[in-house]
Length: 279
Figure: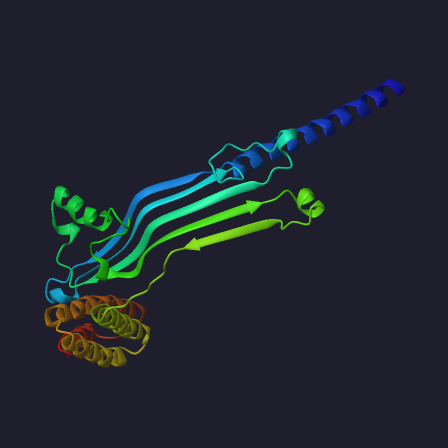
């Protein structure tokens, strides 16, 4: 009986020690990963295009361009290094991180003529390369400068994280952050402003149009939308949108008639015809 209890106690102690050891190994691994996390991206370009075949001045491209982003660990002199604070000799060392961002910008080009969705693969590369052409003297983008809403920035951030015990003993800050930004500029051209305003108007009208419950009210809204499209020079596009909405209403009427079979089929045809002839 005594041996059984002693053996059980020994197993429990070993299990607790193993759990503590496993926890220590996990914490050490996480510390190493965080201390030496590195991220590096080069020549990133994300682009969205809209082509308007009727009113070509409403075609646009929206995108972000990035020359480089680099995150890495350094020593106290800001030189790259591998840091292992799990070793006893390095436990009191501070962790230093550097983040560098080169030429990150957001552009919005109105009346876009060079749409990569309409050209060959070679021409796509040529168009995109114009957004990654940098001046040798300044290191800045020197093409499409007027199209950028947020002018390409160059940013450097330096972070120092001191060991809590060392910081407390030496009355130091737990963290020090140094941010260096050479310039930050937001520019909105008149064409960009007008284009965004038009998109917001159309989106607002479309959401209001879909939010109405009365078919008669929707008919009036459809006429208002047709007038709005016409004022923007989108006469043909208006007809396509109107036909699209009519298909939506026809499906809704099918549901209404299915729920109430007493309504004659000609009512549906009349309402759909009425909608098509609106505006």
